[in-house]
Length: 272
Image 1 (cartoon, rainbow, N blue to C red):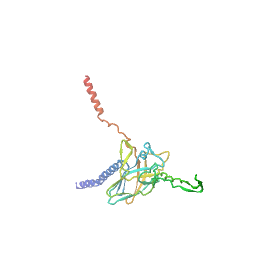
Image 2 (cartoon, rainbow, N blue to C red):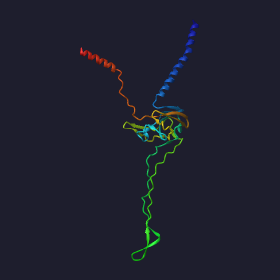
Image 3 (tube, rainbow, N blue to C red):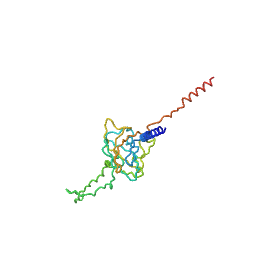
């Protein structure tokens, strides 16, 4: 009896790690699924958590009718970087195959910006012509004078194109987060959101895409982000659809069929 009891006990102990391993694996799969179900792609590197990595919809680039990014366009990036560590970290590089570089700041102005002239142009004082003289009615000679033309005002100049770089130099403080390209949308202006003050703006410059296959909503661009402390991480940036484009239909009534049947029975009863 003692031997049988010992054998049963040892068998239970040997099976326990297997059960625990199976439960643990189930938890890992559940966690992975939760990360995958977040809005927008996410990634982790070191103490940093990258969330909702994406590219704004093409209609926000200045043309409300645009549905795709064409070859040579600039595309604005948006993402949130959360720093769970005790030290500040800095985004020092962004690389990819479909753009020539990045720049931080406002997009270039499409319309010319006139320069302010220092002072209104004034006509110069008359000068004496050297070649000859003219006679006055009294017969005396007087010098012939001519006015010099006024100097034209400076021509308007266009705003300089932003300088691309491989070093965005965006700092993420310890225990805090930074949202790049933060904006507030309104249903009345889906392609003209309000950009939050003091939010960093980051653009992928001079996209290199197939002219016959422009970059549209739901397509993605592969980015490699480099941080000073955390290192490199590769993530997919998905082109967002226009705000409010997806309209939800009425909620499905699971009891509609049942209610319909009850109504039919009531009508039959009244008829009888």
